[in-house]
Length: 157
Image (cartoon, rainbow, N blue to C red; front, side, top):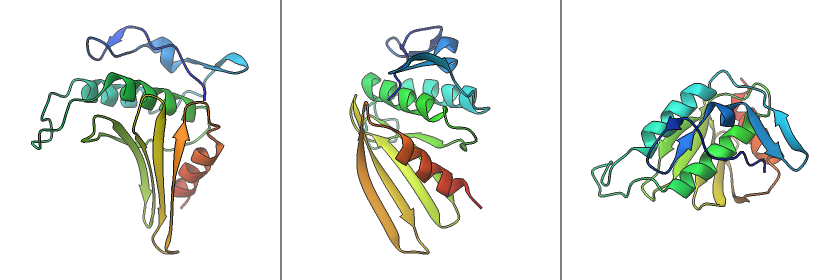
């Protein structure tokens, strides 16, 4: 997985930041290369900043505030996904377990990725019409081709 350095100018909390530098370049096994800059990445950065600042009990069920490591993993994952052209913007939400969830939905198709630790996420793919459901895990360093294909399937009309 490409892993941009996490430092910079957009202060999300005392310990979690997103910078313009993170939105531009990414680092992969081949080295630094420019991103395909998604038109929605700035908006996604604003959503991550808002999630990072949620307090204890943000959902009225005493859920913990988001964990910095999980947010960092979610941001790295999202920036890597932006390498693929024409992916639609995900819905970005905090989770009651202190993580972040990215999801895409179109009619009967649904795909979500939930960051469950600093180095892993789970995914769920659902096609209601075909009665298909698939789940799995993503670890830091895994190729993202399968994830990109799921997102593209949701984005087709």
